[in-house]
Amino acid sequence: MSFANFVPLVIAARVLPIDEFGHYSIIWAISLLVVSAATALIVDPLPAIVSTRSSTMLKPILGAAAQLTFLLACCLAGLILICGLGAWAWSPSSGLLLVCLALVVPMQQLQFACRRFCYILRRQWVAAVSAVAYAAVLIGGVLLLWATSLCTAPRLILLWGGASLAAAAVGFAGSRVPLWKVAPRLRRWLLTRCWQSGKWLAGSNIALWLSGASVLPYTALILGPSETGILRAQLTLFMPVYQFAWAMGFLMVPVMADAGAKQPASQMRTQAVLMIAILGAAALAFSATILIFGIALLDLVYGRSEITAQSGLLWPLAISVTVDVLTTSMAIVLTAKAATRFIFWARVASVVVFVVSAACLVPTIALDGIVWALVIANCICALIHIPALVRTLGRRDRMLSL
Image 1 (cartoon, one colour):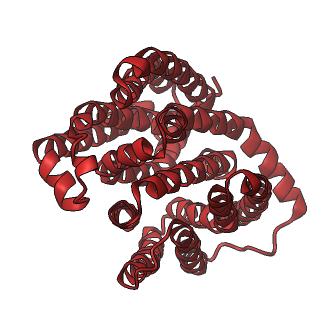
Image 2: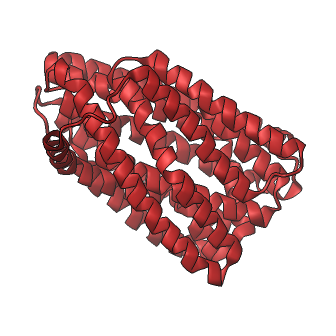
Image 3: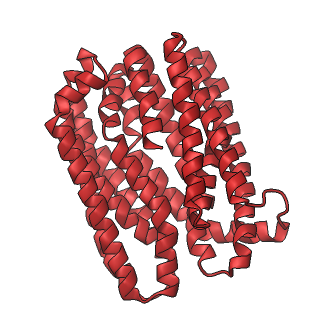
């Protein structure tokens, strides 16, 4: 799916006015917040929950999770719709983008949840077919809009929803998760269990957004939408390695949860170290490639002088991305062991560091200050994760809630 998400951002950066691309980037950041927080509440705790249950309960639990996911997504969409209608009087363009986002949030959430269900069920081929459907609709739609000169930010956002709906339809059909026949008692039980660890994971995801993706609205507030568009374009070059890390997370969380529940602690430690090493090496190699060909890539991909002129941002961004992927790999292990409270507090600490660092650096070096503040925050967050990881891997088959 990484290529499918990469293409619309590249085309949007090439075609849209830089101010409009900045606004589009802000909506993208908000959608990331909504989806990640909602996923953390219901979907992310599932591997740890189902690993201790009989196989006959697996699909009923996932069916209850699908219903809860949809209900939560509709509630969030309603809040976004209210915000969009309220913003319309202040800025019609911003209000329209928020209304479009409200329409697509339920479909996005179902698509993310369905993909995770496929990994839990060990039906990776269904997740792959679902990703193909998503890519076909999204890339095909973007190319059509581009070819017909109809590419605008609202149309691109609505296209997210169409692609997510196609992916969710394929995924639920292939996974055969029961969507309708779910006992209310099971739904209430699952909601309670998900809340126990999901509340901390949702909080950590919000904190992660505040220390990461919130850099876009923060940049817009301080420096304007044009600078936001430039920063988003630079970050887009690193999107494939982030998508790889997230995909590995979807795949490895249930595997790690099973290892922690059913296998010796030494085997889980081996798997954890191997996964962290693989993700770290991949991030390092990818970031080095971006640095070597940075200016040429910016010119080739975007063809806009205002973006290429800021190629110096690629150095701190490469450091930030590599460290952040390492942190993500450690968080995968902690999530599999239900040690989500610690992830939350580590992300809160990184938010504080980011805000303080940005406040000190932005007045002096502007956009560079925001990026270096992101580097500092990610490094602090990674360092804080290390002792929790060591402590978690040192305990045998025990579900933690630090």
